[in-house]
Length: 112
Image 1 (cartoon, rainbow, N blue to C red):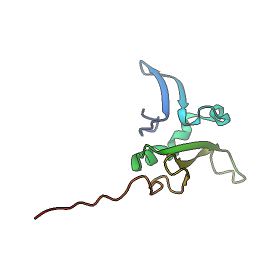
Image 2: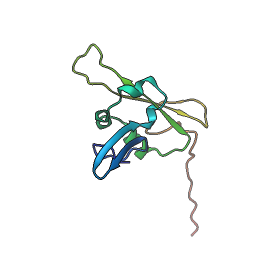
Image 3: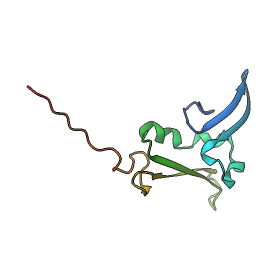
Image 4: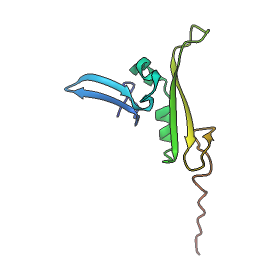
């Protein structure tokens, strides 16, 4: 579904009826204590749509939490995303690329 800032996110849900937006939620935060603090304003800086656009690996699981305000008062709250791989069983250092074990290189052989 499209987020309020116009990007496609598989975890964003809004109950929209006749151009009226009802309940909005981030399904990546389900069953977490941070879900009560979530607002749709956090979608503007959330990296999940960009991660899913760069890497659509079905084995990569994303985990989210909301970063609160720090001692740097100018920083706004935002989403902190970590990833893990269900196939390799470990954390993923760069979710944009993946773990490196799920997808092997393709070799094309052409005949003359």
